Length: 352
Ligand SMILES: Nc1ncnc2c1ncn2[C@@H]1O[C@H](COP(=O)(O)OP(=O)(O)OP(=O)(O)O)[C@@H](O)[C@H]1O
Ligand SMILES: [Mg+2]
Image 1 (cartoon, rainbow, N blue to C red):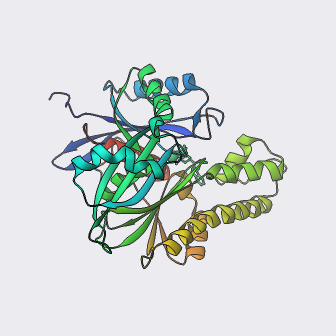
Image 2: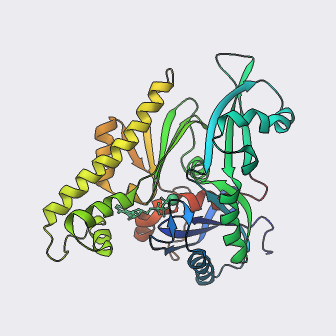
Image 3: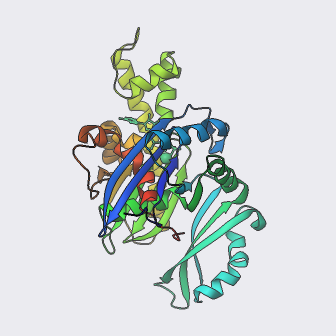
């Protein structure tokens, strides 16, 4: 009847595209209202740095317009090397006590000047091995980096009421659609265009995160370099087109297999590092999000190397979708690219 005060739109500014998801909640169930994607060229965001804000602002504006969205309250997120997520151990104290001492406690874990970062934390609970200590998830994001993103939204006439971190948005989306199982150790891996993030969870608690500064772009760049084709042709070849002029389809497959092997090795290295540093926890299943998770070859290679199942996540698994409004096949094909945006759309005003 009335536009809800809680009404917010999820906007993920990824390096390859802006993605927007709008959901409607009724009685604890989300319904898909609208979804939109606008590609960005590779010069727009480089190394998590906004190079061309005008293009992004225009893309956001045009997408919202075409989706007929009037809401100005949005949930968005940041990621990359300007964001530090660490699980730390501190003496038991209350939330309020930690609030007043967090700057001081955090200092030794953050590679930036403490005055240059926004700090957030979540007390996870007592340390199983030492009852005088508790585990805390510490999040620090460089202020100027977050300010750049906030400025984008202000310029687009929007108010970011939730400023999230990509991997937490994915966790939120996963929780709603799949749910966490107590004590089960899983890895959520977001395979994006320029970055891959690995996050290991035990039950609903994040116990390890790592960012890898490579992703789907690596595959197209290798094709472009080794076949001497254009960026656009390389992108097409990566997505399965084997009719590229003067290019032998077998060599496309070979180059892709090599590049995928390299990408998977990076993921494996992160998980090996996790195993080496955690006492007894072992990852039993991997869930994949992000555009690159649509590649069957990536999933197969991961399963072979890790020896565990790698499942592609459907961010709309438990979301009600009108058959008339959306093409199921299309939604399935592009779904993984909307994992962050879907998790953001599930946020509420007041969420951190
Ligand atoms: N079927 C597919 N096979 C392989 N790669 C794919 C497929 N579909 C999409 N991709 C790749 O997925 C990437 C886009 O995924 P996504 O939207 O998750 O990235 P992003 O959020 O823009 O990037 P990042 O998170 O790194 O900033 C692109 O590199 C695209 O080429
Ligand atoms: Mg992304």
